Structures are given as structure tokens and as C-alpha cells.
Image 1 (cartoon, rainbow, N blue to C red):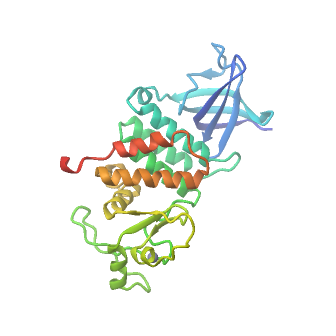
Image 2: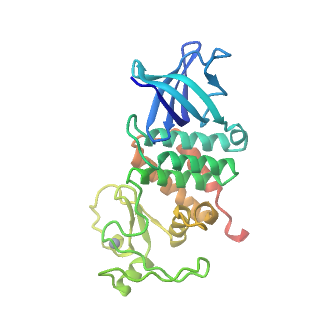
Amino acid sequence: MPIIKTDAYILRLTPYSNTSMAFSALSSNGALVRALARGIRRCPRKGFEGSLDLLSRGEIVYYPRAHGGLALLKEWAEDEHQGEVGGREGGLEALSCLAEMAENLAAEEQPCPGLFEALEEAVRGLRGGGPAGGIILRFLFKGLAAFGEGPEIWRCVRCGRRQPEEPSVASGTAPRPLGRGERPGIGAAAWRRPVRFSAGEGGIICGICAAAEAPAHGSDRGFDIGRGTLEALRGLLSDSPSGGLVLWRPLRPHAQQLARLLTAVARHAFGAELRTLAAARGAVVADGIEPDAC
Ligand SMILES: [Zn+2]
């Protein structure tokens, strides 16, 4: 087996015997690596530089699948330690959320372009003192999108209608020209009614489809989300220079709905309940601004 060298983020660490550590890491190609760092708890250890910690970033050199399914770590050089983030209030929880989501998203020997970059962006956001809830929510969507599984938030998942764009003073964007087969009247009406979000159906459901739905449509009927909530989410997920975390200033009620949405998306995507889900939800709610504070 050829030896492999890659940049990686450490996602999880488990003590292994008295002197070793088993760990999982996200490599720069987006694949998961499970490895054994033999003797790393005995110090000093030749070949291992810096500490091996939660979301430490560094270069790993390893023999794949050398030790009963686990790769064997030969060298580790830490470039970036997240001690400062971990020391802040809620910082360790935010790091744990990102790491657990990344570990659940990634698969061994399956590269996923974009996943490492999404994690890198999230960790940088935390290092820069960014809002933890927005960072976690954006990472979840970006991570799923890297696998082509990001929930649809721009058009109705049932009828395919897009919300007609309205000129916005804040963003200064021009109305989007109507697409083929789109009629302005019906399109606008569909979005004036409450919009629903269903993780099971893969995204938003316009007002007309939600109102017309037969009661026996399955167990995951989703829940209504307000216009402001949808706009806050769209702003957060935008990749425009003024989008993303720059735009993330949700009002408290919107943040609460987005915490519910995050929960629904995570449960649907991962099946099992994430250990850090409550912390992720709490971080999103905590980013909310009281309506009378603006
Ligand atoms: Zn629809």
C-alpha cells in the first residue's frame, strides 16, 4: 500500500490502549480517514508535531488500512489548533457540532469535492469570531450540497415554481425575468401564502401546493416557515460577496424557526440523532436578535 500524505481536519479522537489514539479525519479530497496514532499519548513522539485535537488542522502521513481496518498514522504536523475557539463561550460546542456533522457526511475512500472547503470556511468563521449558529447551519447545507443533497430553498419541490423576485431596497437586486412557463399572477400568489418546509420532501413547498395537499401525504408534512425566515436562510446560504454570514442577522422568531429547520434537516440527513444537535439548535437560536433591538 502506498503511503498517503494529505491536509486534514481531525474530527474525532478516541483513546486506544494506554499510549495510542484512534481518530477520524476529513482529508482535503473530502474523504473520511479512520486511523490509529500509535504511541501518540506517549511523549515526546517522533514524527508527531503539535497536538492532535478536535478540528486541529494539519498534515497527516499514513498507511491506509494498515491496522485491522484502521489506517496507521506515520506523521502528523499540526498547522492550526483551535484552542482559542474552544476557550470561548459556546466555542467547544460549535467545534463539536461541525466535527460531528462532517464525520456523518463524509465516507471512507469516497472523495467529495467541496466538503473540505465547506469545513474550512466554517472553522475560519469561528476563528474570526463569527456567529456560531449561522456557521453551523451554513455548513450543514453546504456539506449536503457537496453530495448533491442540499434541501431546495429556491423553488417549490412539488410544482417547481420559483418565487418571483421582488425589488429589494436592501439588496438592490433587479427583479428576475420570468422563466419559461411561469405566469406572474399564480407565481406571486403561491408565495404570498405560508410556505412550508419539509426535509422529507427535500425543501420548500409553495403556498398553493401546501394548501392543496391531501391529508394522507405521508408522515413528514413539514411545518410552515415565514417569509422572513426563508429570506434569512437564503441570505445565509448565498455566495455573493455581501451574502453568507455578512447577511446573517436573523430576528429571534426567524432564528427559532431556522433552529427547527436545522433539526429537521439533520434528522432526515443523518437518520440517527446527532449528539450535538441540541447545541447546534441552541447556537442558531442564540444568534437571533430581539425584534425591538433593531
Ligand atoms: Zn408548489
